[in-house]
Image 1 (cartoon, one colour):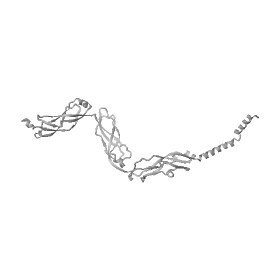
Image 2: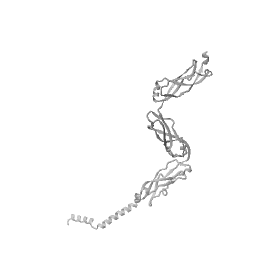
Image 3: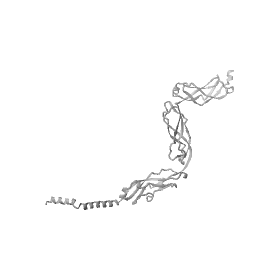
Image 4: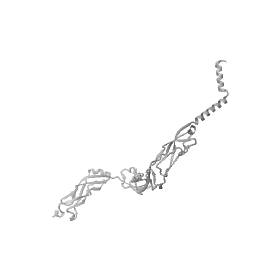
Length: 326
């Protein structure tokens, strides 16, 4: 037998003889390896939900700082158990805040329920500092929130009504004191035609505040023909009606006008006239100094006077109307 043949025979016997015994030995070796390594300590981190029991409304205490939804814990145990852990295996941790404590400390050995053979070695954050505030309430106005644009050539009137117009709010004292009004949800006026409109909407939810009512409120508003405002400044005032020498104070006024876009466009080319009428004054008032209302004329079509500033001027007569006639 040659050396090569002897080597091949030896190798063949090594792989083919006593297969059952060799297979059992392999399984036993793998089992021992798993047991030895599975019993070694391992470490991992996972997140656990936080559930809080807050003081009842009657306690008049409000937590100002938001609580974390989860905390991160570090677990230590055998590698086989640690690797097999799922998030559902560690239930949420419950915080009893009904007594309004100033801080919360997570006791790693007691706060968390973990499977046997596992221990919690760390919590992040380990301590929570809590800030409480007295709960109070008051009644504030409701502010309608209108968005969008009506049909071309129209606009919203300035008068918008909310029914009811007020609501009672409750929450932390600092937030309640700083709240003068609460908004409604958006009311879309896009494409609305001229006329009276009504919408029912809820109040917008504000953080840290609760409302005494959950029902929708009524928002009433009008869509009107578009109006433009213009101002004629420093219009000279003249006295008309009687041939008497007078002195006017002031000599000029501002005339505020409003009307259609076409009327506002024609305003630049118009000649606004401001005057006070002396004709028809009682004899006792046509001497000395009297206040007279300013009248405006020469307006283009589509414009009207909304305000004259000042609305009156002081007229001082140099001599009486009767003296002028004599």
